[in-house]
Length: 403
Ligand code: DWN
Image (cartoon, rainbow, N blue to C red; front, side, top):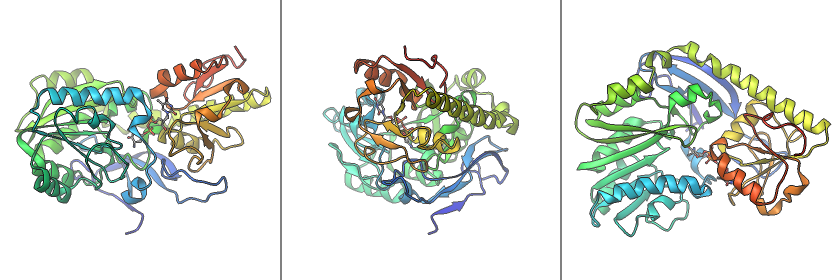
């Protein structure tokens, strides 16, 4: 199989009415960290497209998932706040379940969230990344075959969780057929995805990378659920990963009685389906890129050393799209052991552990994952750092002088 292929039909409604709304050029996979500053890497197109029929926003090219998710560096456990967020979800589901019932998490990553309820219900994680975990894991991609294997070995699932997973799956039909196979008759599926409404409002173009094939709003979700006899029982918005929606689903037809009111208050479908809506994204790439370059150049001229903090997938996209190389920023701190000692794909900033850096040598710290700003800022201040903390989105947020 070639490493990448172009998709010409909508992943939700199968329409061919796809129009390009943003092109970030050819980039390396966002989590494909390298070991040498001179590494040469495979790059693939990042073309974002809009389905004019249902409003689903999606990538035009699909990179072989075995390339993206083998030797996968991201760990859910890298953020205490995210572990707490997903643990609350698991606990609320366990409250509804009997001890003998089965809770399956698709995309379980390191299993940290499942582990918090493993003493209360039967748990099983599914994730092709093969990350070591303290909970039982099926290290395979979720599809009909995997669903059948799980059902044969463990029985039907009474609750299935899939957080930040649906956006990573090319064949959503295969996913939902697998859900239909595995979910018990009265079972519940809860999935959480970054929300297109926030993506548009906050110009979150750094969330565009090869792992993120789809960018969801409710209407395309309803099309998929209806095709598989599933009912949207409720939608909640959550302030994680740049603004997400959590959907609770069960077998049946129709949807939550208040959904029309929710859509009226939260989802301007006409706006989502207008290509002109997305023109802001292109402007934002230019503005954010210009701001970061200017700020880093000014810091260099003023001989004010700066170091990055947090090397998320988003940072890879941003640094590559804005052409920020090691000449402007050479190091980024990250708490993930699997990323330390390696370099950012494409731009090759060295990733170092927090313990290896004396922050007092720096006047500025630039935080990349704004979604973790508070958690990271508190660690930086706890280290005794008295300089300025800025973010990649607001590089001029503080005066460019040591406080
Ligand atoms: O969809 C996805 C989301 C759920 O996670 C995956 N495709 C990939 C990943 O996206 P990301 O890399 O943008 O996720 P984060 O959670 O924004 O990444 C944060 C990065 O910052 C991690 O590399 C860990 C690091 N970090 C740190 O060094 N110190 C994070 C915190 C909270 C810290 O205190």
